[in-house]
Length: 202
Image (tube, rainbow, N blue to C red):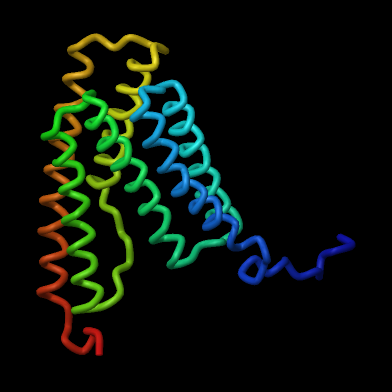
């Protein structure tokens, strides 16, 4: 017989550590400011380090949330928000540093503005928005991250990318961004039209 066979498992829902994933996410959001400053100052090695830290923290808070059940609606909102803020900061600051073209920066920023505006309208007119990123949206995020990492790795001198590879990254980012933005509008417009009136906010 096991000595602790009848010992109940700890209640992770009431653990004082349950807010740790959200705290880590907030730290990731705080990295936006130094990221912008390092890119603006053309300190691309430091910017690459900050992006690496942000990526590690993203993996850590996700692991903790899944492993211990420390999931929450707030965490579901903060986690993608942190990713979006960091990506937007990268694209805008790289544009300001004359590294990325304006059209790509505006595509990325414009898509996210459309998503935020749509989610806000849905929240106030219909009901709470539960983040449910599609496979296309996740793929777009991965491609955008690859684009930023590729550019920063090249600029930092860690590895020289041939012009063809850089052009391919920019093209793939633009294509995925437009496709996922259009998909988002179509899906959530359909949800808004099909939402029962009884389920709308009172």
